[in-house]
Image 1 (tube, rainbow, N blue to C red):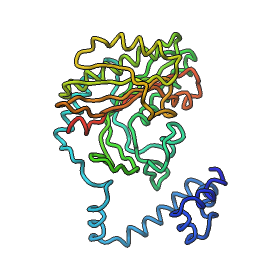
Image 2: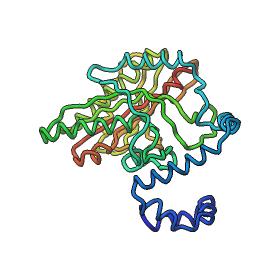
Image 3: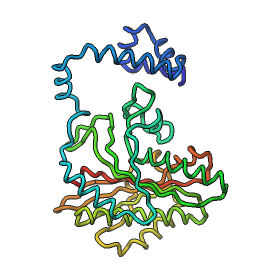
Image 4: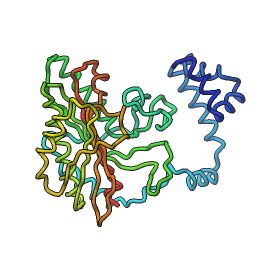
Length: 317
């Protein structure tokens, strides 16, 4: 941690400044953030939360349950979620392995690699964080497998295709109707190597987008629209070739969208959004694109990674 960071944040963040005044000043952040080892910090926090839990009464637990947006059951019913999840999984292309991901990840799995603000993720007392997107866990597993392949053959181009449906939690608050603190996402990742001529990008993007349309159709969506955004002009030929390959895709349309502003800095090269057309309404149900996570996780700049996420709750409803 940058030692100048906590003091600067203490000056600009009124809530943090108030807490630090009661706790003894910015030095507390240095102690907890830098000087204590991970195991010592865990020991301290476990005792803090043990004491807090010991003072809670059943009535207080019930009050918290009624007011805490993170703990309420999902609006969608289990049967509807299961039907939607099964329909999507049944449409997975051959070669994808479905995993059951752990509900927690190592600390900074979302921020050090995927550039997500840590304040949007729920950290745990034991030095981890609650999953905020299945593609992060899938990327870690895919990069681990690719590292083993590269150790055996530094030029290995063997693809790793993984999928998982996971209930995830996001800590940021959205005021728009239908926004949930926890929800189910079906995530896909394809990890591999740059094989030249942008063939990895073209082939894997075509496969992910074809699955997306077929999966939504299997889940009962009558029409799908996918909007591709080119983030780097060198990938313009990839966009044209993917659009040509999917022009006859049943039940879906794939178009280019140059107006998208979100996701820049998160995605590289190309990204896309997925919309379901239901009863005259167009609803965003998915997102994806290329990311540089596997390059950092494997330490190999030739690695490539494509991710896709589909909102199971939105489809089920």
